[in-house]
Image 1: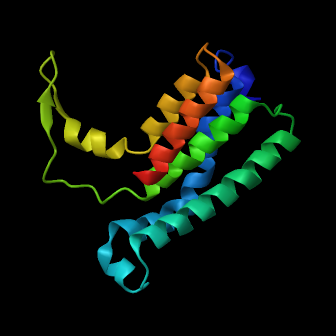
Image 2: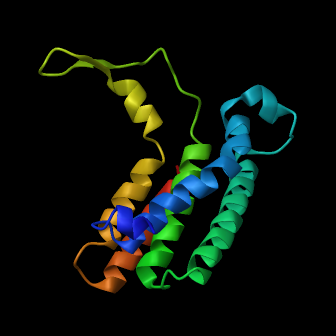
Amino acid sequence: MVHLVFPLLSTPWLVGVAGYFAALPFAAVLAKLHQQTGLRRWLGCTDLELRLTTAGLVVVVIAIWLTLVIVFGVPASTQVLLAALLAAAAVIRTATRPAIDYSNVGTTVTPDGNLVPFGLVVQLARGPEVLIIGLLVANAGFEPGLKTLICLGIAAFGFAR
């Protein structure tokens, strides 16, 4: 159905973006634990353990979601699987980012005189940039093996910070 509304978007783009938005609510509670050290203190776990827990939850949600998408007729391909992996990495990066620092808004003036808080925009874009750059690489026209390696590297970067 989405191809009827957005006919120019390829299946990996739709799978990646929809997977990101499908898994993001499940990681929202863990994101609060990452951003507020007072809450994390009560858990008694390290940052790595909390990151691995977040990754495990997100991967399970994306796997269930991808299974449903494939059952409903989206053909399984390497690009679709890479899009789902990149969506999981983007959600993990979004959920594990630090709290937004409002003291560094980094205001910039655009050519038409508008003020843009570029520092806040950069902080809010942490996570989706992994998905967008990865999907651009996954849909590029070079060798499939190289695309897969680059996308796996981008996903690893999304997990590692």
